[in-house]
Image (tube, rainbow, N blue to C red; front, side, top):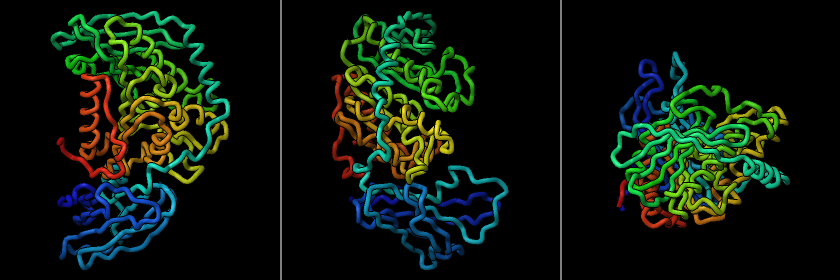
Amino acid sequence: MKKILCALALLAQPVTAQTLPNVNLVFEPFHANGIYKTGERAGWTVHALLGAGYTKFNYEIRENNLTILKSGILDLTNGVGTLDVTLDHPGMIYARMSFIGAPVPATPPTPQELDKMTVAAAIAPDQIKPPVARPADFDAFWAGKLAALKQVPINPKLETISSDTPNVELSVVTLDSLNSQVHGYLAAPTDGRKHPALVYYQYAGVYPLQKSLVTDRAAEGWLALDVDSHDMPPDQATAPRDYAKIGNTDRETSYFLNMYLRDTRALDYIQSRPDWDGHTIVISGMSMGGQQSFVTAGLNPDRVTAMIVNVPAGADFSADLHGSKRGYPNWGIDDPRVVATARYFDVVNFAPAIKAKSLVALGFIDTTSPPFGVFAAFNQIQGAKEAVPMPDSDHNNITPQQEGGYFIRSREALESLRKTGDFTPNRNWTKTPLRTTSP
């Protein structure tokens, strides 16, 4: 098969077009899928346009985007050079190049601009393990919270609104939860039949929900529920902007506590509906929505059929303390109370209970949802599972054009689940060539 350079090729553009030279580079990985074994030489052949006039670059290669393994100057005078490193243990490697002697840009470079000079690879990613053990009372803590939630009646309130989609009923849903309420949009086919359920959890931020997310799925035959991450009506944006860090010095006061319980309450409601088919519940989300999906699947192992997530956040909250760069929710690591609280909300600690068939996509250069933590969580899942590595991808809002692998596989999995109530994860994902188009 012909090697396609764009599989891990990044066109290097200037950090600011007014001040930095325009040099085109192509990073050709030694392995097209960006995955290597321990002890294997990993890296890239870097190609440059001859005669471009700019040939020398600083570079750094880091382990887990934290510890510098190699640094120096890459000379591309002859149009080609190499960046490489060898690890004798599982992990992620990042290589970032920068222009030598270039003027300081007037404004800091954006993540998109930095990504154009950054590549990454995975070393034995299926062997990455959690760096810290679960708290001894983790299960007991969450069992107590779920027991308290069960004592609260669901008390569903539905307000039917216009769906703008034929044969689909759209409702604003409000449910009682422990110390808060669930809000969201529910879309249901009007054919009088029973349907599989698809529950969406939302990415980080405070914003109104998009009705089309569920009406489009209901038109396909799903009973679809979009759950707001906050205790606010789905057409509003009134939650505090700094919510993620509220109460993070104590597991009883963390904002995530009620959020996670609301996510489970959404399942309680779906299972109470007469138009649910009685056996298929799929949960899905990206970023913080993926974080909530991991938690919900872990807290409800016998109720979730499948989990389909993209760049899930919330894995390895305190990563900087043990060799990796942390991402969202970016809790501090200087306060021991915050570090202790984090362990009760970290998706890595929910993953061992997950039995759902799982599809988990992750970006290798993602700094919002760093892949080391995501792999550590993914590897703990007990059910059949498939990772979708996206070697060129940062977070979904930064490089959506690099997430074709997830778009393809998630659609395939959802179609299979809708029609049959099942899908088959690819257990050989570490050896599968990168897919950018449907078969």
